[in-house]
Image (cartoon, rainbow over all chains, first blue to last red; front, top):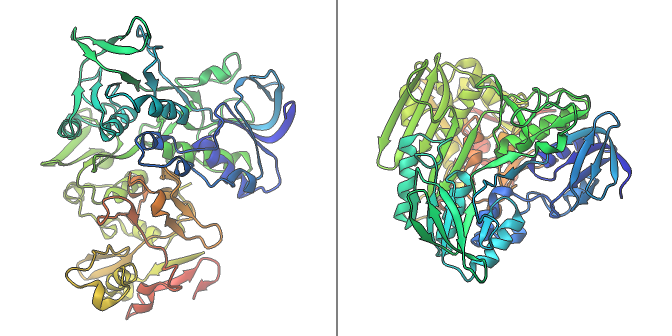
Length: 430
Length: 151
């Protein structure tokens, strides 16, 4: 297999890779496409691994595309090997077997690795990450004879892990360093509602706390307790470390490819080096709301970024203008959505309007007359229209009331926008 | 690629599009049974937009670049490469509602019956011709073909 060459070589086999493959194949049926990935599975839905762990989604339903996807798309998969380095001058990559693979165009879509803080005992049996299907499989097996779990980190992955554990009948405690859950995507009020939902389902959430060590039994080394920054020791038999991911930028170490927090790409998903593109969690790409690049490791952006990369790689000009942050999730049936500058507080030119009614919470953030951030909990009416308004940069000065109440209609938008939305082809989003 | 085109100039806001959409997507597919008090609730895929004396019906445009499909975390939302129809495989939907948040037209709606999954216009695939278009009394909804024009 190795020492070969592809017209399009993709490192990574997840959402961004699929987006690129589908874009390339819609334009070019004959060019060769190769995919190199460390994981051995066909592309699966990463956000579903917690659903798989608790049994809500069968393993057969976790795959992101049908089993014949690669065959239909005529893609050569080289799985179970790691891409170790890139030679931009020779236009080849070196894989973990020592062999090399040449490319005409290269897409770096290797994603992110879970952040492993240097907490003593993190390597103990019983301590898991929740990043791959294999992580979920191993945890699922382990949990079958366990009952108390600690989740370190209350981001999206951490809370979906905690929800899955609660549904498996585990006693769960979430430990979060920040002063609230989902600190990057929610404000204090929304966080409090989400936290309360966990408490109502007998999940414990401890904020402004840190795990200092994972302590084990002397004989087996298995996890026994965790020591937290309050000084307490919490008995547990399982722990999940879900404090975030970091882009696998080590792949381009010693190359001229520029990195910030991720691999830096322009609005065509190109790196600074010719014929090399990046997309997905590994990339630091354009966010139209801030007018610059930043890491937004979410699935929609991975697919769209991969698609834009694939289009440009195969000769169709496309711009990545959809890279704002969007999150939609539900916890125990409560829908929670946010987009853009969701956690933003009043001030610095931002005006913030909120409406709270029990577990229904709506927040809009406005700057220069434009909608730049939203949080919707419970009442999610008009959600899609709101992100559509954000993406189109529509002036919302006269729409504030409707945005807050969630009774906005397409008919409330400017004439030219209505015309485009009801008569257009929906082609102009890319 | 087929799409339903609204013609606001001749829409009288009667709401029959909603009625027939509900019938088509009800369990019984029968107008008498679908609206009985104890019939399972049905969500209309069509929205009647009204402001003052102006109105039009809006539903999924089956976008060429469908953001709902791109945002779908499971792969349940797909665009058929042959027909262009964007539809959801409910057996693979986990109800995260990312598609609901992604659709700039608000044309993907939470399925309140099941608490999970979503409903959206499927151009009445099973039926063959969109029921809302067929029953619009004033030709305010038209089935158009992106290539061949009006049907």
